[in-house]
Amino acid sequence: MKINQLVILVEKKIKEAVNLEQIFIEDKSFLHKNHKGNDKDKFHLKIIVKSKKLKSLNKVEANKIIYKSISDELKTHIHSIQLSINQ
Image 1: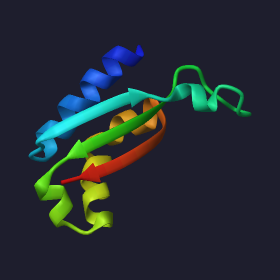
Image 2 (image 1 turned 180 degrees about the horizontal axis):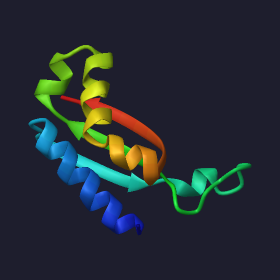
Image 3 (image 1 turned 180 degrees about the vertical axis):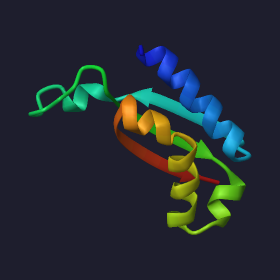
Image 4 (image 1 turned 90 degrees about the horizontal axis):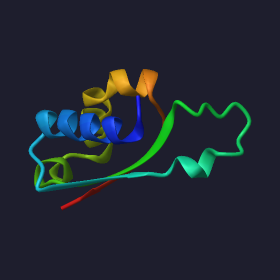
């Protein structure tokens, strides 16, 4: 899967899982470029969401919702996530 396809899919799945005011996804795969075991087919994503709903939950519960919504992609196409939840 190409990064642009992955970003579209991840955004769609997160939006389906929770009511968001805004979402921003950025490819940060270059951060793992020289790491041992780096897989060029797995990506590092920085995900910033603005959601009153998620911000009202504790951090662990909010993260669980996001991670559950993209669980398939985490297994197959995502190496790492930087997640920020704002209100």
